[in-house]
Amino acid sequence: MTFREQLVKSPDGRVVEVATMGDPSGDTVFFHHGTPGSTKTMRAFESLCESGKLFFVTMSRAGYGASSRLEGRNVAAAVDDTRTVLDALGRDSYVALGWSGGGPHALACAALDAPRCVKAVTLASVAPSDVDFDWTEGMGPENLEEFALAKEGGPAYEEYMETTCAFMAEIDKDNVIEMMAGLLPDADREVLADDEARELFATGIRYGFAKTWRGYFDDNVAFLEPWGFDPTTIAVPVALYFGDADLMVPPAHGLWFAGHLPTATAHRHVSEGHLSIYAHHLNEVASDLASAFES
Image (cartoon, rainbow, N blue to C red; front, side, top):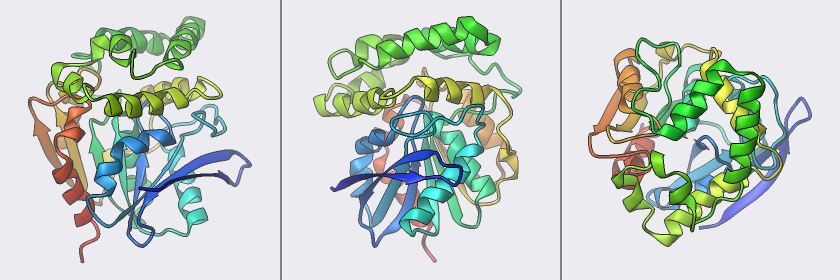
């Protein structure tokens, strides 16, 4: 599977790092990586790309990898960059696929870029923070500490993030499980038992910090602020995948979406975690992607 990378200029002069993978004659899937992540995260989805006639496109969100930072961005800001990338590649209709922190960005495309965006598929997506449940309940200790500081903001949070990201910039297949121990249930540890899976996962995270740690910082701030759109107004189909064993994005997030998005179809799997929700349900996800383009 050929993985190609290039740089695209946005209308405001920023650099957007882009990668593609798959059959250019196939239907377009725009992949929004997790938090943290980068274009290289898409390599972990190669088997999904091979499951049908699909052409995968992704970008390092602003501040990740080689992409310029966009200070103060909200979740909706990713839609303009998505359009810029697809225009540069000559692609039109697409499905927005978002994993974890990429989920809200995929939903932004469904809300603000329809009918060009024909469907959104999310894997363990984060919900808005102003919801009617405890947003962090059920998260692992690393996330609890991180978001407690994020809500307070200020110098203490910036110092914490800079230090944390310095460690994450050194993540690899040999230390990834140790570094994320409190966030990995048994189902996710089983996925990472494979050397190649660990390397792909770690590389996607590590490369996100190639130039700065601000992409991760900006993502977290954006999640806790108004998103710039109302997900409950999405009119195109949405497929939600989430697992009850997830320690990064607990199932309450997926259940909120399922109860508030009128076009959503929920795929809840009680034994799955943050990584296994995709790894163990490849055929279901592939079917949801392909169905978007069926006439």
